Amino acid sequence: MRSWRWQFSRMMSLCLRWCRLCPKRGVRPSKPRRKLGELWSYWKLLLNSLYFNSLTNSDTYLDCVFEPIYWIVDNVTRWFGVVFVCLVIALTSSVVVVVYLCLLPVILNTYPLLWIIWHLTYGHWVLMMVLFHYYKATTTSPGHPPQVKSDTPSVTICKKCIVPKPARTHHCSICNTCILKMDHHCPWLNNCVGHFNHRYFFSFCLYMTMGCMYCSVSCKDMFIEAYNAVESYYQTPPALFSFREKMVHNGVIFIWVLTR
Image 1 (tube, one colour):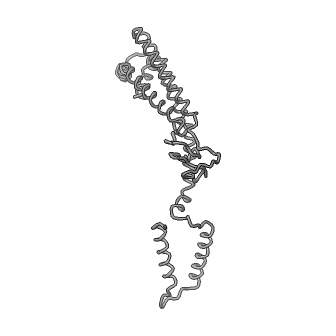
Image 2: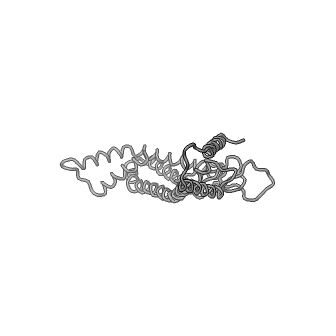
Image 3: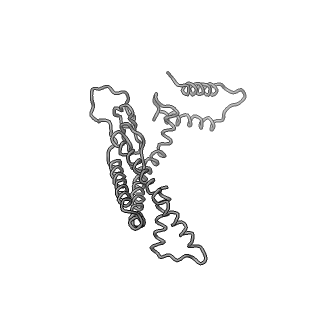
């Protein structure tokens, strides 16, 4: 069954053709104008003969026009994935460094033994879980449809891969392949979230949230002290702090704002 767009375009083309065939009384087109019209019709027919087929419509034309933009976006996003992975590693490493250099000495000097054991155990456990699940979510393949031909009838065929596409399988334009049970393409992982790495992605988000809550709650009192100390820098006369104390203040504020 033809779409309404096709029927409308055919009707408009017939109207235009009828108007061209009907001679206008008292007006005779000049020869240069008639030659330009014939030349334009010839080039239009030649252009249509190069790409026209029964499946061509306005949506296909728009896809062809915007194809260079899609290509640029896909390639830029693929490179941005590497930048985002490096950013995750850098931010996580900075939090760990600040905790070891600024927070851990305060915990060891002020907290009782049981609280020290709890902080060391819980903090390192959350850190190991974050690192493990992020590594697995980044390196584990999300899953792809089998490339081997089988006798099992498939429901659909991917138009870009030209391979059988099972249920809940989608084509990722960034990875340029079909993904089983595709959820989305995560730039922070530089990988698609699919059938085989969905649990690692969910666990990474869960443990990262737990780690941020732990740092935010445990650093609240230190953040208030550090913020008041930084405000005293601009008093007259300014408070005297050593370079190490200023670094500790800035580190505590950084980690609290980042994990807030």
